[in-house]
Length: 368
Image 1 (cartoon, rainbow, N blue to C red):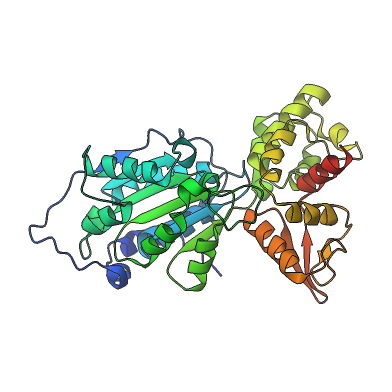
Image 2 (cartoon, one colour):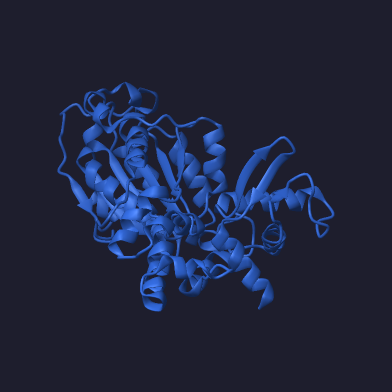
């Protein structure tokens, strides 16, 4: 359970070096060299509206600046605000790092090309002696040397994972990525790898159970604070806004798209839009399809099973399509890592449900 720390409390804490002792490298910096800061945010989006993510920012700062976590992951469905949150975070903490670099996995076809790009920028050398990014991070770290720390932000991490299978396998061009992640988590250095992903890699889940100071923030919807977004869209029927927010899970992108639809078709009248019996997806369909196409056939069966349940599916009563437990439980676990199903605990056991938008999408798919 994460304890959220007030941002105001960070100032006296950040000067302490106790949190880094367990992972401090053995190399030294006898000349007390203070390197020039080397930041590259050309691949990062421009900062824009961040709706009430104060607690999330505080948590990430605690993990990265205070606990000196080697790997932090932000997961969530597309449009939930991972990149926007990370961009604001980087803006607020970048001065704590000598090297800051933001890259997107979709731009690199192999793990080798990604590592080469990172090393060349951070070391400012076209030809380098380092064979991996881990070698570079080790070489640039000194005991207690926060000024030598690097912050590497890698967006769209899900692009390294295979489609049509459970969230366990990397595409061939990234086959050694899992090994690299484990090495970065276990090796002594002062830097941080910040991963942004739709899906939670198995290695990250396992590292968290090992208490390796690796953390994952699964980003949730905005809740009531999404009303600020609807105000900007100039919608009417304010008493219906919370219902609209809940139906679209407080997802900023989903709400922006639907709010534009309401303006276009209903002149901004939310009550008229909500008077329809079925949930309208419209331009959300292709966005949701990008998630759906990544699923295995077993996961799709479970999604359809859950979509046809009024009150969710009990894990103890698996659908008849699954004769054994291994595939069924593996598919449930994989869907959890993708953030596509929600777990509710009751006296009958674990009950899994779908968000309204996802449920409607799956129904639409089964009827097409």
